[in-house]
Length: 207
Image 1 (cartoon, rainbow, N blue to C red):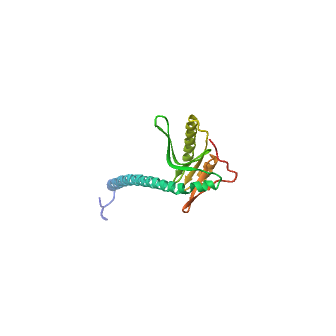
Image 2: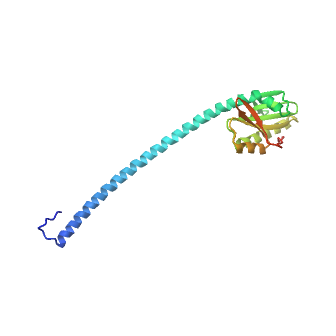
Image 3: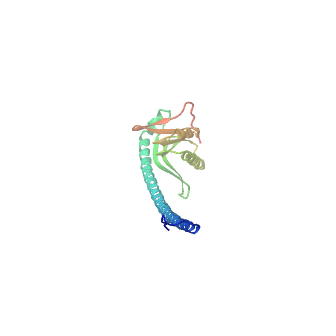
């Protein structure tokens, strides 16, 4: 409602102007609110879509890492095996036999444990677990694995001692220390060969 300069303002006119202005502000606010709501809705939908895409990408990345880890584990196993007798010989061991992918089964043929590399002589069997990047739970699993072997050996009157080692292409300091505390040798990749890492005063655990 417009007022010309020749008109005299009175309460009714001022009230009418106020009402008109209030309606305009209300319409403007409503329009802004609707635009804001639409924008928020579109933003939420875009974020939801982006989140779904990110989750799919993460799943695919995990699958690729898993496939790479498996191949890396196989590569590490083939890298470890050819040199391992000589490496342990330098520590005073004389293993006569080395086998890969060794399975321990019960009388019914049920697999009790799988061993990546097994070194044997008449007195000691060295059980080696190979991982691309070992974790602490891999060390725990290896302890359980050797305990199963010990039980199976006792059932067969096999009096050899069992010792263990954890081999990895990538070995963190925390896992290395954890493995040593568990009584395992630690075998690590170095260049195109491997080295057996053991701290001063290390005494391997025997089962």
